[in-house]
Image (cartoon, rainbow, N blue to C red; front, top):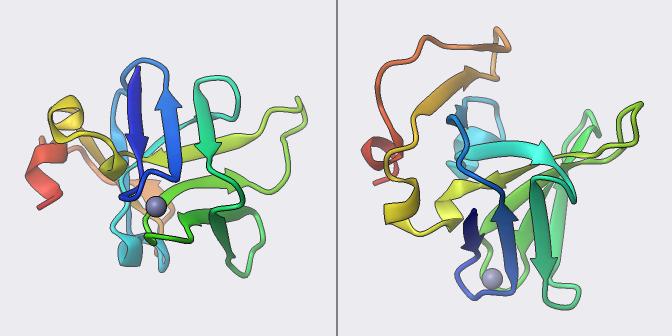
Length: 133
Ligand SMILES: [Zn+2]
């Protein structure tokens, strides 16, 4: 399991296992946040814990997902589908930049062209340690 939390600790997550890769997306939101996403379903492979009502949300025009951040320290911790799918499961993703460096350093990065083609780009061999500083 991989755990992560915002800088002040008010928002934290648990991710079961280790993801095959993390996604660096070029869409208008993600490229600004610099997030590295790992996906699953809320309450299944991913669990979020927040202290009080400490999570702020940003919902972009399409109104499909919310980007969630800590109101105290500002870290973007996860996104969450606004509606469950037809099987009642809710898609969610956590920002692996909130995890400890050694734990995620070797996970491959999948670049996703969220700006124009909405497709994965070819793998280029880079992992988290190569891109996050
Ligand atoms: Zn915080």
